[in-house]
Image (cartoon, rainbow, N blue to C red; front, side, top):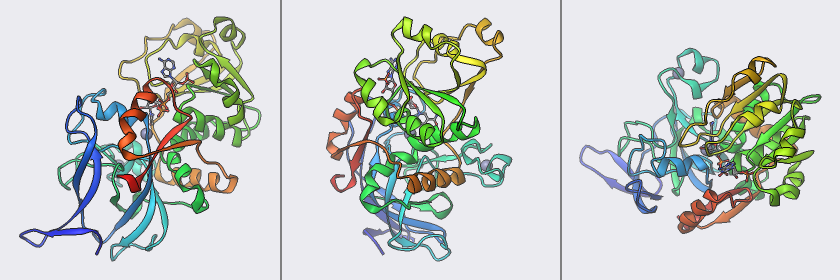
Length: 362
Ligand code: NAP
Ligand code: ZN
Ligand code: ZN
């Protein structure tokens, strides 16, 4: 089989994989040798080609949300090639181009799993990193690595041309996290959609809302992004720190996808919703937002909602839609040892629009 094996007493085969992770929240990421399980009957062994860098990686590895298990190897926007499959694998074969997003398992029996909404599994889905697992070291280790082993039920088929593969990686989180609420709240022709925070998630939100046929408004704190946001497909751009511009945007939108990674005042965005409009929160800041004012919500029957990634079937639906339409992320490729600089730039909002790690450099 693949890779370097250490045969331990009891004949347990362990694959040693190159990875990059942190030993503690205050420590920089550094090279690590990690263990991946040998392929079980339902497993797919994937040689990772590229991995996107999500702001959730940064929140987690820095311990911003609490509960980070160390060593922490982030990364849940994984694309690569299948190099081996277990004896019961029917959906994939060696040489296939595949992706892995934010989940690698769930109970598969609860109401949410039955409905294809594994992200809301009642016993808790298994995240690609930072979730309990029987594998060493007792929690999952993600895609900042050169290989991963994943059950076929959580592996996605990639149908884009191979030369687009690096730019497909961000679809596995940034893409599905914006696609799922756009579909659930029925973005499409005749609907006016706002996207707040034009980073990794936000730029995919604009591309996908536009591709679905909605009228799209980008809200940014960065006036210098205006032209770039129009180039992504927005029909108009509102600089959200400009009070007059926010006033002019009042009662104009059916749906807002809010991707901002920091605590902020929600009131001006709620005011931008029409009657019966909904703002869906997908950003997950370290410190929560101040409670919005209630009367503007009552007076227009507006809703504030949340959404988390998306199910496996809808992730495949989104990938296939993007392959058909030629939709990919706008990326900046980095070497693995450039991750600390990438995080520093991400914190300054200096990303156009997703860093992607070239996994050959892990
Ligand atoms: P990102 O690339 O860093 O983009 C975040 C954007 O938010 C920035 O580019 C910036 O856009 C805006 N922003 C940043 N600081 C701000 C501030 N202080 N005030 C106002 N706007 C600010 O991050 P990302 O990877 O897209 O992730 C965004 C958030 O979504 C993170 O919290 C992440 O953990 C979360 N997330 C949630 C899910 C889910 O399932 N719900 C999935 C993935 C990620 P402008 O310059 O345009 O203002
Ligand atoms: Zn993510
Ligand atoms: Zn379940």
